[in-house]
Length: 465
Image 1 (cartoon, rainbow, N blue to C red):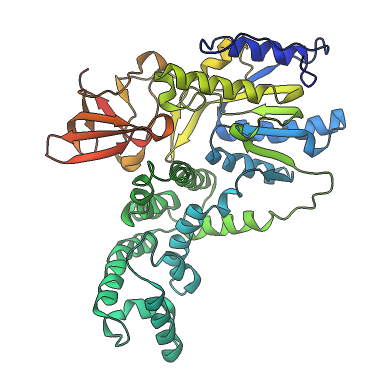
Image 2 (tube, rainbow, N blue to C red):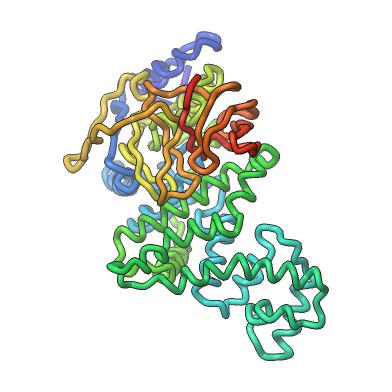
């Protein structure tokens, strides 16, 4: 017997979980007959989805006299919190991110933002010190102290001492060499930042906008590659990659609504947004969290977001029955946290590395027997030419873009398969390791290069089976 959820919620949740074959049959029941029907709402994009959730939370509090602490929003990956946080700030609705810090306070996001601040303002010594050895470049505390001493003695900025490191007698030859490598990395980024202007009719602005600069920092500095290389050894690396992709999305969202699309304007917006993150928490806060953390909790109202194939269930879980069943259990847990009101939401398109890609609703929606409700302004996805590929590549996107193909056309990658990567060309998969979000393949490319590549962010075209 379930003493928490209404009959309507338990019925929808059971329709989902009964599809799992590797489970002992059991069915929860409740004395709370009836209840509000479970809703599924599909939106044109993730911004509309987040706006609806924030506004609906306000409506529930007004009409049902609920407090903010009575409402929870669940998502599959931590990176999804960014658009929700933005929407809740716009509605002046206090929230708490459980199990993580707010998006712009996450380490990897702060690292990239420090790069951007230094590019806009080379006199920003705090940012310069933060990223001097990020990712690791062999520049230690002793070198930093020598640079600080030199700056204090000559009355220059920390960054200026780096630029003149070759003439610094207090540095070793190795330290001078490492600092020069840092400058070699930074110089093209400085040139790009200087090229960005508010006049976006010019070609110069195209290469210096906020999203282009975020992408350039990730690629040029090796910061993306640094975390991608740690996916199999660091359980947090995948989440960090998700957050870095979401930072690109944040910059792209900013560009779509701002006249001044420069990095400086983007930094100003983020600073202002972070400045209003101190709330008067009387009456509690709305809870934002990944569905992984939801077990054992309960809320009068629950929003389960991002219900799209490729996101929930996530990635390669669609290819492995046991992983798919684990995703289904997660969905069941999320649904049964709701006491009275449950709403599942999805986006017909979602930005991935700054580009919008069409999605189809999660298979769990059909399993739950839910029909989509769409706002009047909803624009249905247009038919697109599809190919037998895992991922897609656009020259403007860099090598990290990834979009799930249509569910009916998904093919699992397997050893012996011939594939084509947009950067490395054709090759043969030698082996697979890891699973789910951490699935990697080892590919021997025709060029002779041998690469371990994270499938979730790859852009493989399948050449044959």
